[in-house]
Length: 107
Image (cartoon, rainbow, N blue to C red; front, side, top):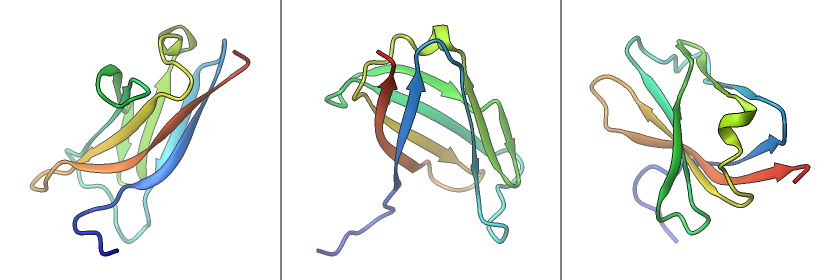
């Protein structure tokens, strides 16, 4: 089947009970993120209907974006929740960059 439009990269987020989550999402060297780019992680209920929480990247630079979520802050996220990482470059439409499910470890 032909898919029209941007297709986000499928991914999984592993959240470990009692541990902060830190990750750096890299971009290819030939596609640097321009100044003014924002990247935000949205976490939804398992059915994808309601937003549970969102976290903007703590660092956005040409080479990618870094997220940091403290352990106490991600306790509200259930195992199997859906997520989308939204990329917004200046002068471009808002794009779903990554999407997938959250897996909770040591629950």
